[in-house]
Length: 310
Image 1 (spheres, rainbow, N blue to C red):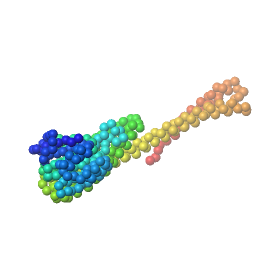
Image 2 (image 1 turned 90 degrees about the vertical axis):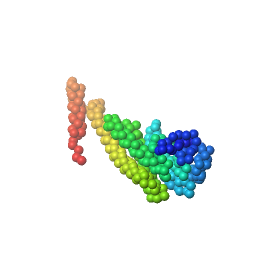
Image 3 (image 1 turned 135 degrees about the vertical axis):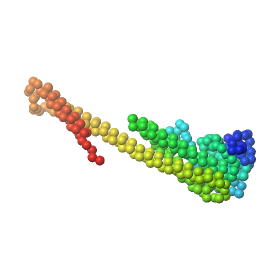
Image 4 (image 1 turned 45 degrees about the horizontal axis):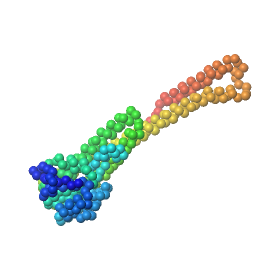
């Protein structure tokens, strides 16, 4: 699908056909649509084919007629419990007449980018897209942090496999985010060092803001990953401790129940035993059995109350 936008007076307006100094957004483009883009900007097919790889890393390629960039953008996956957040490549082509974006699916960053104020001044559209990407990472990282603490609260009440699996999903998302943010950082720094790309003062300030936002997102990802890792370790210890408590309880119950079984087995043997000639033998044996069982229960309770030295 191809979308056409006109950029006038820092406003974006959708139109029905490509216009000079406008924006063309391609979402999961067909072969015919890619050929239409190549008529606007003579991009090599090899560069466009790289966008088909969902794991393609950020890169920049400069041509006499255009600049081709691949950026990793954050993506929310509603309904995917295995990976709630991921990253996907976004292709950017900018020439003297057109600004083109290409993605394999509907891109969250592009939807946010459509609402931004934009002017076709040098590399400003690219820088604004860089900024929208970094801000989207920040937004999703805050969502992930809220979800982590929400799941933690539920797990403190009742540990469940579903909660643990959601934490694992968020942990994977943070790994994807951190890898992509670091890759984007190399791209941004290379872009910033090139004086041909950024010569307007306002674009230099915008580039500095992009770098700051991206570094902050990297630091947030590192902090949240550390918190989540510690939480998972603590949760693993709690589950293991609870399991040990249950096993200890079941073992104690088994041992206590063995006492009356043992006494009954002894008196079932064909040998001389105490109280066997007494008319009250049954009651005496029951009393002694209960007494030993009570002593066993008290012994278990006392052992549980022994202080643990850390």
